[in-house]
Image (cartoon, rainbow, N blue to C red; front, side, top):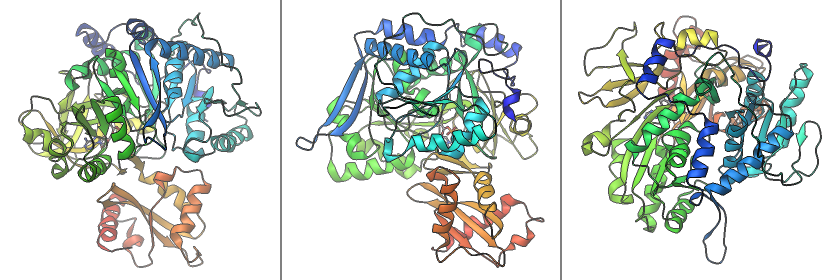
Length: 580
Ligand code: OOB
């Protein structure tokens, strides 16, 4: 059990950090400075106290059509963060503890994010869409002390989800986290669920920060755990330090033109690495700009907010950009304040990229990043051709990129190959994943991104494909073998292969091909049967196969002879060619 490997709730187990010779270089270059997230929150809230930090939208006024909003200054943000900090301490969270943050794009998200930083707790960035299977995994793996939700968000019963995995943990003799309901909708505490009945007073005396592993400087300790998209099994946990992450944020702002006047629309999930730090929420707070949180990701809501709040910048995944373009062509909204539209998370087709300027009247910036570290941006000064066709150049002069063949030998200049990378804000290993770390990183510390790329003579990276066993569904990453394992656990399944089916709207969708046993019975509609199977096992909806095919006549019996990767490719082509 992973829990025994932990040194108690206030410590993290050992994991591969950045070696001292590199750390010394990153400090000397001024990349890593002595600032923690606690310092960051306190300093920026103080420095920009009277400025607007956040506008969070909620319901639409049925008469006027305008969106109701709630506005916080930086002083309000600090006050709310200190109240959340008190709640965390009151329920027993101590500095160094992990807290699973699973909130939608609301003001509470910001209060608890900053509150956790103030008490030195480490957020674990779950998505509102994650379900019991994923949450139970995060809780066990991180030995989380608390799990923060908003009951009823997107119509979902998060208390039920909590009970499901917490009961499972108790049955295994493990102590589940306590559940904090952030929006005050729960009125009774029971079974580990804590209701926040009275508005807590702001916490004035902040606890002393603790080191959560060997690093001498607090700023080089782990600040939080991000989630990897995952290629094998469940999402892995990515330990990012204060120093490495804040460097990527500080360095991103000038590249992306973020300053005090920036008004950034947040439509993608706030906890995602792109939304958080490229330059995202943290980049805006660093400069004293304003965040505008959209209650839902529809173009209609986004356009209303852009108009109403004079938004200057937004970050999108390609399918959302397509939806914006279509909607803008139909409705001609007033987008005159919008200067920059960032697009990342999945490959953007050049034909769509070309429309950003003409249709939205904004500058396109492509962003190719990963929660493990490396982030690339196209630059303001780049010729149009490179902005449309490439995914940019790295943030840091000390980001090292290698493009190699299957045997890790560098390819000839301009050829495609596997992208390997290391640098001042890229991890050297996941948290408690010894086996995966042996495959996921080279001996000299390069992260194997699983992306196939070509480097242009200008240094621009062009993503041309992927070698990892992962599906990218509208920027959400899905590990195929996590889904195959769940399918294989069903009675009547002899073998199961999960494939990514190319899709015009989402980039890819999840497909499942099943080789049935002779006695298999999946009812009249196997897709529905499997959907239920996945739901009952607490798998997030976005990972559940949208197409299921039962086949008895496939080269599946050759599985032992041909690689599963080749099989997946062959089946994906097959499925893409035949209509459901
Ligand atoms: C971002 O982070 P993750 O961790 O959800 O996913 C990383 C993977 C990359 O390895 C690549 O496969 C894919 O997502 N990806 C792109 C891309 N941006 C990400 N593939 C093609 N073109 C792009 N522009 O997705 C992420 C993190 C920080 C900033 C932006 C995206």
